[in-house]
Image 1 (cartoon, rainbow, N blue to C red):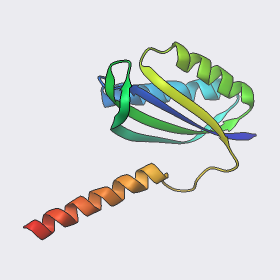
Image 2: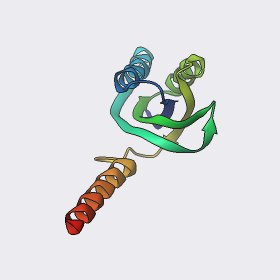
Image 3: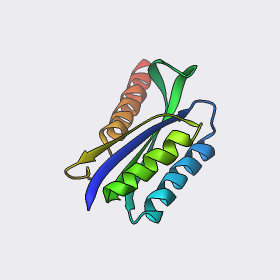
Length: 122
């Protein structure tokens, strides 16, 4: 089985529950096509480098997928149709990253740094 990382950006005006529903829908598509989602990460609402379809921010979601190439083609076809997804990208990887991704570790590090800075000021 091939390994893939699928990342999609959802519109900024969606609620977190709607973003989770989009991730669940993508997982369902993968599982219907003999694939398996090994990890789902929601990176949260982040600023974009430039406007995409009048959105300055987007919800970022990453899925680690195991499955044949037909899984990816069907997932990308369904994602292309969905109006709530403004961008997506799927890449093939040699192996999935263990533990939290770089983006999740970055969020943890930034949060700890901000807390430390606040404590120093007080």
